[in-house]
Image (cartoon, rainbow, N blue to C red):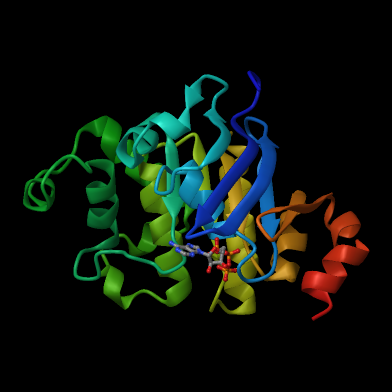
Length: 247
Ligand SMILES: Nc1ncnc2c1ncn2[C@@H]1O[C@H](COP(=O)(O)OP(=O)(O)OP(=O)(O)O)[C@@H](O)[C@H]1O
């Protein structure tokens, strides 16, 4: 546990008697990227809700960096520890430029108005330049976010997470609705972020994308781990084929 970045052990959550998470245990090492797959209702979103403090487990251990008991912290405290989450739908500020979206993300404690009139310190400007480069939107920095394609909005939102320099990124279905080219570019983007020493947990149904990530895969089913291993191990696992892939 002490060497794990994220450590879940024997976690249970029920909603009105329904066991959404059922003895779930999983360990992510620092700097690891993990893909999470599984049928609808498997508990993928609920697991992210537990890690980010939105949902509290009824039982079980959830630790970050081997020493922070996440079950005792609220969502803001967990975000401040360095766990960032990207939801499925992009929620960028459409009427602001890409650069200002990143500035806003960098200064979450400032008011929107205060941030827009403030041009940022050199350090912060450099960080924004780096993020723009990573998400490949440097040339579009002065464009309004509302004019970006769906894929670019998703990248901008990933950039908004990166601006806060998290240790862990939780990413929910990033390529839903993307073109094949955008899907490929998103795999490249997440790999680059992971190479930059960030731990990444990505939930995704698109198996071509998951294969392209080339990382360990965990398949959830009925709130627990059904299979874990390489994409080849997991995608040929009889139970995984039965409950998920073969449908
Ligand atoms: N707040 C809630 N109240 C009641 N039931 C809930 C609540 N949140 C989740 N559930 C139930 O828990 C189960 C797990 O849901 P969850 O959204 O975590 O699954 P998922 O794997 O993310 O599915 P999907 O792939 O459809 O996003 C589902 O049966 C869902 O209906």
